[in-house]
Length: 440
Ligand SMILES: Cc1ncc(COP(=O)(O)O)c(C=O)c1O
Image 1: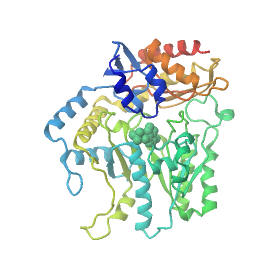
Image 2: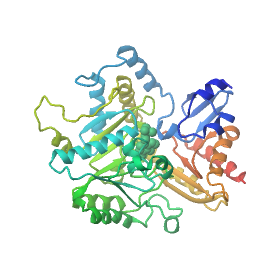
Image 3: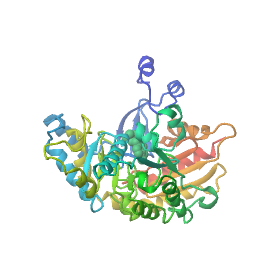
Image 4: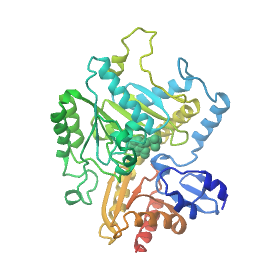
């Protein structure tokens, strides 16, 4: 093993059962394309593209080269009242891919920061227009919007919220989530049933008066809670209700942007235009941490009214628009364009869907869900031990089958590379089948 017990002890790992992991550490020391290299000399196939973030594969040579050149040329430059050339280039490239009207981008360092930035922009926007009473934010059960206080408050994952209850933002409500086993089990793509769940927003608008609500935030496809795909008509209905009440609609596209659903943004694929879009992950192919918030022209304009020498938004991070991250971002945009990544991703969807749905009928499987290159196999939980089977699959995948599979409790999540080889995809799912067959 490549890590000492002292270093194992020193590192408090995120979202990890630390004591369990450290008994049997799974240590990755390198990566090449679609494969991880382990400290015991094995190659294991990554079925999750990092953490939904490395869609082009690991160590893409063009991105590696761009990062190496940039770090040798300009490692850091102040981002307040000053900026470097690369960040303007990236802003232009990303807004060029965005839905029409979302013409401005604010850079952050992660998805969590993007979400909190978007919520702050929404609140400040209403205030700038003289509607400072719009303070209420609406999220959704089973939504994941990162781990900072804003995102955690609008998020709907109880384990993430439990320890912080009283300190969460007070002015938040949640719509119900959109998954229903009875009516939607084994839907291929968007479930036909459930568009009416959007009316939960109308209910909350009735309760608080829509005129007091600043913004609604949803993931177009909820990823981290197990790939909950929006029912047909749902997102359109949310848009209509927002328009009726003057509420801003925020799409959290930290996962769905940059090809994961076959287009630059989920908004394009679903044909619904939000007012703000949050992103991270695929913005740099996961190579350097970076996030961003796309903002509609009307929102940006509302800030650009005061004295020209006054700061319009008192918000920003030391590393907003970091030069090395920006260089990675520009290189990722180049590769997406040159390799036709979004079309490649779209072309793999039906093969991926068939592989996932071939698990229908397996005695350990309760549901299968998919959209784009996002997929989930929900396992039947072991009596009295929810999550145990999911973790067993993850560990056996790593140690025995040579595949990295992410589990969220008993939901196995799949995020194949956007440029996957279909045969590799098939072989990796054969390994998943072997793992499920061996479950007790
Ligand atoms: C939809 C969504 N929002 C926000 C985040 C948080 O991003 P980060 O972990 O970069 O802070 C994630 C992470 O997976 C996500 O999936």
